[in-house]
Image 1 (cartoon, rainbow, N blue to C red):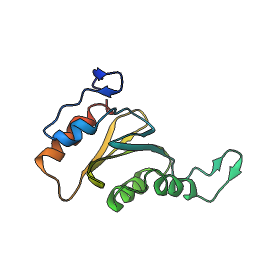
Image 2: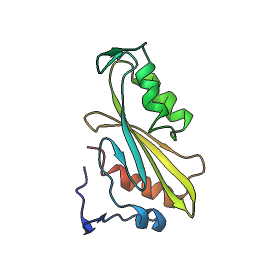
Image 3: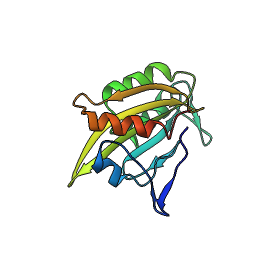
Image 4: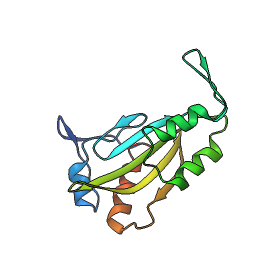
Length: 143
C-alpha cells in the first residue's frame, strides 16, 4: 500500500496523467470514505441478517449498502459484488472527478476487508488519463 505524502495539511500529494483528478484529490484512504473524488463503503454479505438487534431478510442489508452511499456504482460492479459477497464483506470504491457541476466517473475498485484486490472496473469510456488516475488511486487502498 502506498504511503500518503501531504502537499499541505488538507491535501495529499496525488500524481497521475489526469490533472483535474490530481487537483481535486484531497485524500484517498481505505475503508469507509466520503471524499472529493471517492465514495467508498463496506458492503455486508448477502447472508448477514442482523443489524443493531434487528433481523432482516437475507440480502436486505447488502442492498441497503449498495443503494445508499454506493448508489453511483455501475450495475456491472454491483452485480459482481452480489456474486462474491455471499458470506463475506467487501469494500467498494467509486472514483470520479468534477468538470464544472458534472460528475465524471473514472472507475470502481472492489477489495476484500483485508484490502486485497478483487476487481477493478474501468468505465466504458475510459481514457489514458482516467486509467492512470484510477491505477494510481488503487495504490492507496490495496495491499
